Length: 470
Image (cartoon, rainbow, N blue to C red; front, side, top):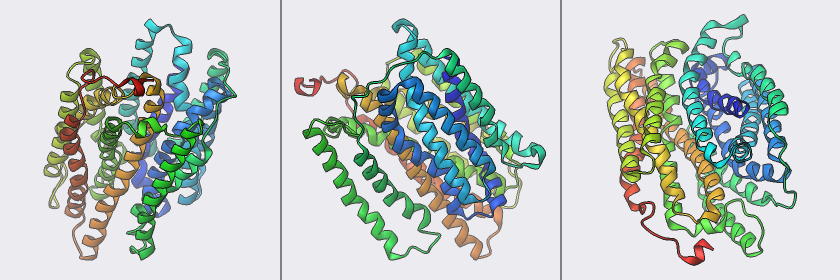
């Protein structure tokens, strides 16, 4: 269990560390805004697109074998990130990291039933939640400390290189302690479905991230429009595979479940406002207000502390008041987004770090309050036979929502800065105004979540008909 937790912790902490390092990376490579967005977004996209097929591949070749391979790939990708000579090399290395993360993450949860009796699994899954909370708290501080220490003059590179010894340790521990779990080579993987999903996603993401940088030419809009017919082709292909009795990337039974599709949309709304928020906040603190990476990381700690507190409380509440908790979580997150512009300097005055404690803690409470009941409520809308596929699909759409929100918030934030700087605006209020523009998007998504969750039936309020259950 410790081996699985170490690997999961390494993956999760890498996400939070990168947010603190973004301004340092931008300065080191003299990177454009869109290039910096790709450093974050490409990992999320790769992870999201491969999560389902890699989980399936683990079932085929064996979960321990897939887990070890995933840790090796992630560790290798981390080394490439730490040695990247250019921003393009870093983006490519982040793809390798994303592949490794997608390989090992589904296996960590899938191995638990093989290790523990049913009565012990609750504690095992709770440890995963605790690990995620600790990673989110540790990441910003560790990232800031490593960058500010400038170990051997390496600047930001140790935030990636630190994964190398940890990854090697995880591989050795897995070889010794994790039991060999045979795979089922008769299972099939939908390669065409993976390719169609990847193309559809890129047709949306590339224009949103690159469009402003290259002046919004006509072909950028053509790309976004082309995503719709490509999505149609993907759905038709999944239906064809279902009719032929073959494996699908996203089971057709889930497409036909309106409540599940609505719930998937709510998951995307929740996570659309989070990664982009931390990206623009890190840039506001470090570039807009001169914070060091460590000061930036320490400033954001109230948010993961709030997540951790809410997650512990959620365990005690169990399955009670699920929709009420989701709605309350969305409103708490929206409250955080509304308060933040009032604590950022609107003139040349200095920023007050303590002013961020309350709004960020409220935001963390909101996220921690909403996550568990949201997944529980959405998964309660599907038949037992589809729960595994639905769980994997939700995680993938969670990541896609994060990537989409990152692109939109980055577009709002950087566009405002570019326009204001051309007009000779002062740096501090310009970055504060840009943050306010970006937060309009996240505020809207969180309020929409709080309202739309009431469109979902309460768990247990409806029974699936016999055909769907079958």
